[in-house]
Length: 99
Image (cartoon, rainbow, N blue to C red; front, top):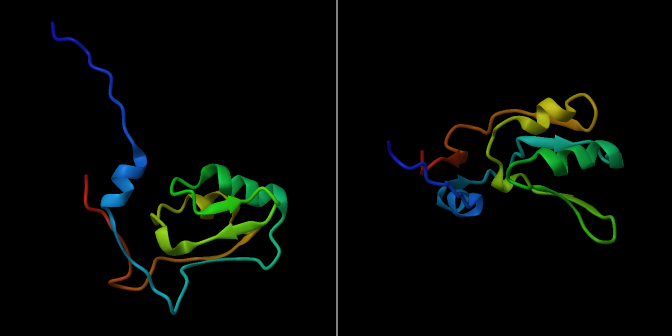
C-alpha cells in the first residue's frame, strides 16, 4: 500500500501564472456607488482573488483587473451591491495557464 502524502498549495503562485488582459475601457464588474459594509464584507470574504479590500481606516476598495471570472461575487451580492457582472469582451479577461 502506498503512503499518502500531504498536499500543500500556494494559491498566489498559481494565480501569478495566469495571464490577464485587462479591458481598461469597460469594467465587467460594477458596484453601486456606496456599498453597505455588511454586503461588502461578504465580497471580502468570498472573492478567491482577494480583489475586495477594506483597509485599516475602513476604506473600501475593489479592482476588477485580477478577476478570475468565477462569478462568486455575483452569486453572493447580485441585486444588492453588485450592479453589473458580465463576461469580459472577447480577448479580454483571464487566461488560465495551469490546469
